[in-house]
Amino acid sequence: MRKLAEEIGVSSAAPYHHFPDRRALLIGVALEGYRLMFIQATTLDPASPQDDEYSTLFHTFVGFIRFARENSNMFTLMYESELVRPVLAPEIAEAQTIGFKLIRREVARLAKHLTEEQRAVRIATIWSAIFGFALQSNRSMLRAHPLEPTPDDLAPEVVRQALRLIA
Image 1 (cartoon, helix red, strand yellow):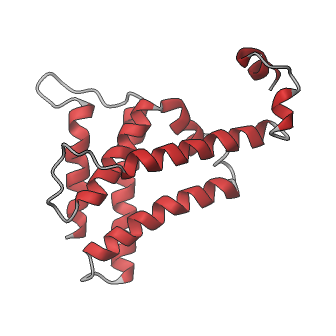
Image 2: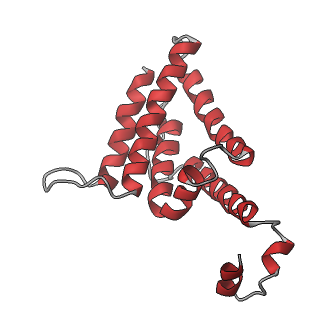
């Protein structure tokens, strides 16, 4: 906390006026990350076609992947830090639930023909593909060979393939 205060040019006691400890500060930063991510993931690109019934989920997942890539340190704090392991912080769980409800609502709208259990399995599978791709992109684990698409170009296709599970 002292080093942070020094970096931003305030007294070493200043952060404690807003946050009781380091963990509370990290939770505050992570929650701001979720807020920004939800805005980015749910803001549709006006240049992208919106004629598909899957466009909301498509743009949500592509936005999520883009957020992970553009904010790798924030993404790590939100999904891979001490705030989620060994026990998920309740504030983080609440933020993650907002995103899950959005996905669940859209999948339920699109997949009325599936049972609740079938939808749950497909949501878990889709999320695993999307999150796994975002995580691998964030860690620079995806490397395109000369004739393959780059991870940036690959992201929309990964999302399209994952969404095929809803049909």
